[in-house]
Length: 337
Ligand code: NAD
Ligand code: UFG
Image 1: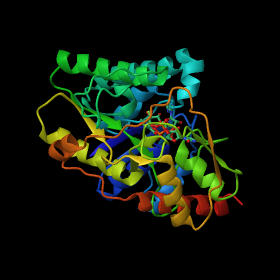
Image 2: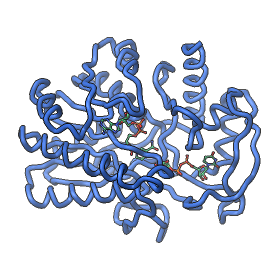
Image 3: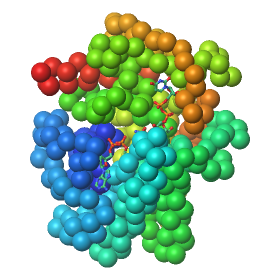
Image 4: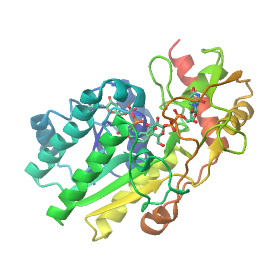
């Protein structure tokens, strides 16, 4: 199948590209490079042995998208492109809605214009908001608690309306939990510019001594060790979840479905730090500090629907997540010297 990946040079997009090419698909990357580098396409060529076309463009450029869909005879789109920093979304909601919601509208217009109706959308566990119960299953009420989350929820609502208006669409909304880890090659991984917002890349930089210590946000939550609990899922498992979603869309008759992609296992910040120290052989100095505003104490996925509908379960362990992150950290540090 010819598949367009918006946001294809980003963290999750690049790993999914590697998985799709390995499964025999033809992948075209489309990205404005606002949070990734064109060199990712070269690294994907090294990993897969295939040249992956990269179209440098914005998803809000409907004309360029339409042209790309036609030129490359695209049959399905996986829509990763988006802005994802929760704090920035609070400061600048207009930019977030323009990019994430406006960008998706532009993509849907382009797809409609050329008659492509198969779409996988990068949604997030953040759409569930404050837990009414755990684990979150897909029937859990939605109620995002920040502009980033609301931008994802608005897109889900738009896609739901679209699927009701035209039953010819095949749409998968994949609600990712906390993606971490890297490809085994060490050539691609999560490499945020500046100081990382998220736990795993921060821990990796402390372990490599690029940052002096980790600040643990909150040690008085109602969790087993008092620190925040999340469902960390290996990015290569997530990538395989996209392949499974595409296969299931091609067989299914439902115009839209929503699926959690997580492991179902809650891991605390301290557990993750311990696992990383063991995997890397490095110490990760840390201090306990106040809670980060807006953080939830704990959440993790009910993964039964992913297994039943996509035939997908996460296979990789927390150890695999930490080892691959460390391997990428060491490899990319050498590459950048
Ligand atoms: P990322 O920032 O690494 O990748 C996103 C890519 O989209 C980047 O390469 C960026 O340059 C590109 N992009 C952004 N706006 C664009 C635009 N207007 N036009 C073209 N390209 C654009 O992020 P990621 O972690 O790979 O996330 C991919 C998707 O998954 C995002 O939509 C994100 O919201 C969602 N998601 C991520 C997480 C997470 O923790 N990483 C969790 C849940 C959902
Ligand atoms: N944390 C720290 N110190 C840090 C960074 C994080 O203690 O320096 C803690 C947080 O307080 C939280 C846990 O580590 O308890 C995980 O935090 P992350 O920032 O890594 O991830 P979040 O769960 O806050 O959010 C992430 C993405 C969101 C996405 C969500 C989906 O940032 O965009 O996962 O579950 F929506």
